[in-house]
Length: 189
Image 1: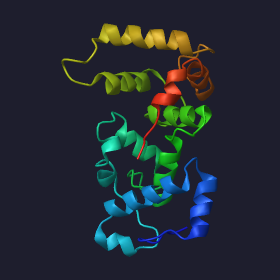
Image 2: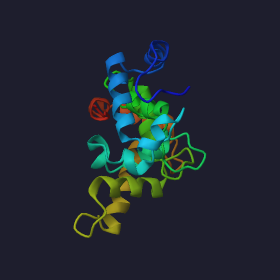
Image 3: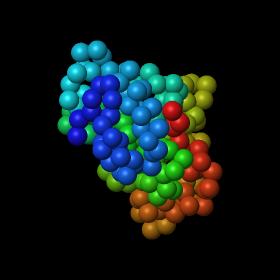
């Protein structure tokens, strides 16, 4: 499904609305923002890809510590370069919208936090997650003992089957006990 650079056909707009948690107005605004970020040469392509470097200029993502992971998770590029088509961009916005369900939000949060894409959050994923949240600088980095203790605490609380990792269902169980998570997991255009 390609998009025109200037306008979305009504049938395509309706289809996007059915397939996302976005309103028609939000889809039109997303299309405008996506098109503005495209290079002029790419605007005439039938299904252009927006490079990750351009996506990361959006104020909504610029200071997000997971911005690269967000692009990689939502990208359908065979090159795994984090570039997004308009439909990828809509999927991203839909998952982060206020209307998305907690299951959708927790599913994508889990994928974003699963840095090695192996379907579990292991100690290395959790360490990278903590470093993203605290900032990976000398002033903010936890000592190795602090990191080890924090990860042990996370696993003690989350690892129900005690296999040393957190799988999606364990993650969703933890998230279900944290109502603030759903409201904080959003991007608003």
